[in-house]
Length: 352
View 1 (cartoon, rainbow, N blue to C red):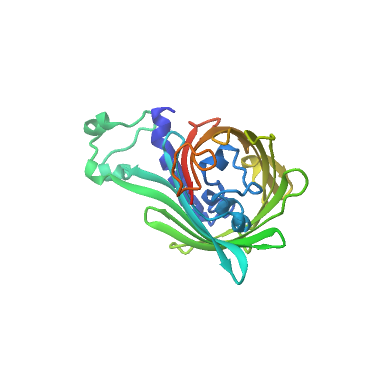
View 2: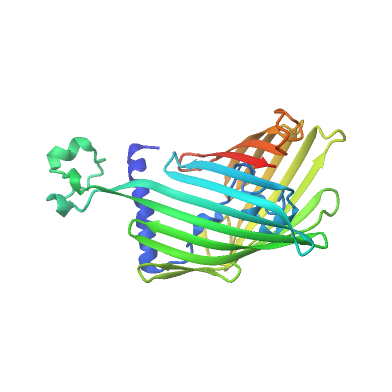
């Protein structure tokens, strides 16, 4: 990525957000909360709606949480586009029994931010007229242009999503929902929003096949900015299928998964498929486990490929003799981008 791109991209992101606030745009409102969480699912092309076997179900399918045993914790850090965008995620779940029925409770926190975005003030503040000849402005220009560094300031673009999830089992089906709280801030501007997600996961049918469905923003989610502008996030669907198979001695297992994001809006070139007022983005994923200790993953996320792997340090394979842990895994994911630098994701998952 060129120096000019690294300098201008954060400012472009903030400018677009300012335009969205001023125009009351809703098409891509709170889009940060739809990008998926966890290094494992993101290495598999952002598929997980019907996989639902670790704490990442909190985002992908809140209905499936009741199927997870014990309690678990997951953390992820990601740097997108050469480190310009920082993504952090943490989630926790616990198996409980409520009213005689097995259930699951969980919380999830996602932060997407662009930090230390520099504002230099207007040209008039510095007493000079700008030269729009395409040159990259640098410190060597301060004296020549009479720049006053004291007028510089930095702001942060921060987006937060909080989820509180409840799920229970009904006749081998898992059903549940999530209360969602959104917070966004760009400098002095900020917004709050509240919404609901719901999900369902089927029992296995056929040889290792399972289906799941997530309904995101069930009643629509409203975002209220401190400028007086309100935005609306319409409901969307995310169906998914998964298949898992293993050899007789369980030394090798293969997981295949497919999700589809369905938005009832015209997304134009921002979506892979457009059919009238409906836009669809496909997700495909593959995970291969070797001796239940090493995982190789790859996938297709909208219009880009993904890859990664995992290492199980404790659990069934017992690479580490930590009997108090049911599972301890390290995960890595890489996401490709046709125009910008790739994204790196590191994850840690613990079940106990």
